[in-house]
Length: 210
Image 1: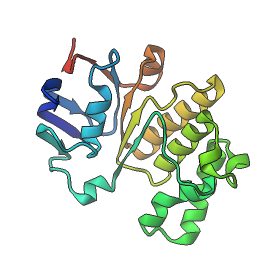
Image 2: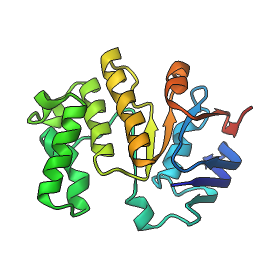
Image 3: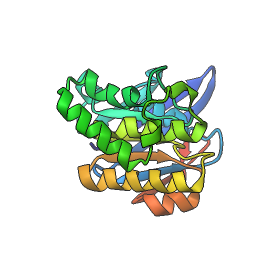
Image 4: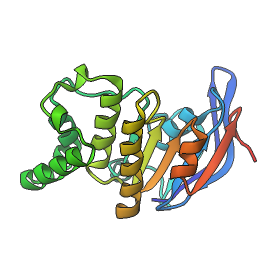
């Protein structure tokens, strides 16, 4: 999914926090969004993800404005994921259930991604009782299981151990290569952006820098 951001302005009270004339996120590529705290990175991701509608300007997805169909083909993974008070397995299965994927295919997809993320021992645990790093892995697995056309990641590997970061980065790259899904990732980690991204956008004070 190609994403175009045109003349987007976002205010909090009277403060202009996002001021973007034009941005293009190419289809099938991984684009990093970096910049200091308060530069508008999360705000931009929330607007693209359809979670924040209080702005002026346009966000265009494959040549169209946001529709329910487009919305169902994207997902956002936040730094502090919200997981249901159910088993890990049920959390990961949820996006497939609401998209009415048949049961046999659901089982196959969920078991496959649990194995790839190396979280077999977590699948019967209550998701809201997991550690921070475990929650982030489960949240990313839940996002990838339905193969979205647009994957939005807000600091998905912050404050977790190096081995888990390696697994998550491997799965982000694998998802992009296998499905050609577009990925936007906010990260403070310059080395991570070099490992993952085809291109990097720098934001400062709500504007795209050089």
